[in-house]
Image (cartoon, rainbow, N blue to C red; front, side, top):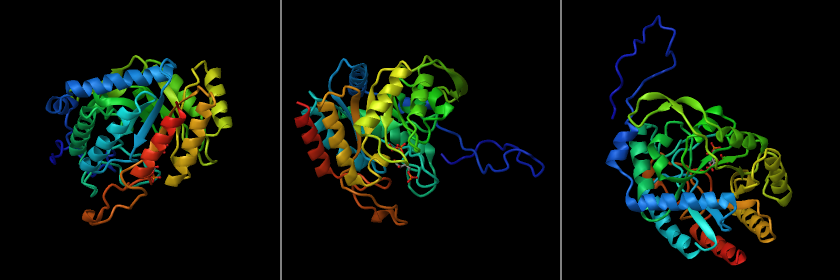
Length: 358
Ligand SMILES: O=C[C@H](O)[C@H](O)COP(=O)(O)O
Ligand SMILES: C=C(OP(=O)(O)O)C(=O)O
């Protein structure tokens, strides 16, 4: 879809739209949902995993939530290969872990950079959102159809209307947890949503985000028909914290977990936490996710019940690559954003945790 919208009367004398270079029609959520309807199998995956995650957060399911997968999606085949392998581990370890796959097509950037499969599916700066939204919905549907539940970061505020039915779990990233727009958006999301602490390390702003997202909100969004609308929400009771470290260092140690739990209790919230082993908790070095993984699981084994889940950035092949001008030079299975642990390490980490959690 390349046509632009009708002329917005951009005249030389105008004082508006001076920095806008174009508008394009956006496919409606209804169109994509009718072309790519959720299947009975996918719905069963989503409903089952959402309930399991709620139970883990409520403390009625003693299993560990594991949100694991690539930092970003850039290729459907590779994502499906990962999902196909991971669903086997999900089944194998199901009695001690609820494994959900990171399917992250919408990437926040510190300054600028490739913004993901949903924004720029061709990876060439065309930013074909209409194609990206379709490909994202299709990929999530295929992964759910395999029986592998999907987790994603919710970044662009219109996006939930296109994929809400596919999500078992959502995240608000460290760069947007303090944003009113994102807190209000979460209040209407159907799945449990974790809020990362800020990039500077502030956990308080994630606690504030949970309190905000629990309440009803009224904000601007779109309907299934693609109509700009005033959206009213009920509030999301399943907001929780994700400790991801900050510029001051990692925050997965027992003292940090205790400090975050105290902060949650003071706010009259259940001390239920997830630790992200990556990002500032690994110093952006993929192998450094392992000490975090081991430490947090040992804290849990030692009886820390606040620790309900872990996040890991993992891919088919370890490391990362920059996006080459000639896309045929992309290495198979390697992250194009943050570095990830590879498949063998992933299997070892899960097997070790399963054993320790017995
Ligand atoms: O998770 C991925 C990245 O850490 C995040 O998108 C920010 O990336 P950047 O600092 O490379 O822009
Ligand atoms: C961008 C991410 O994390 P953070 O918001 O913690 O940087 C992520 O999990 O992909």
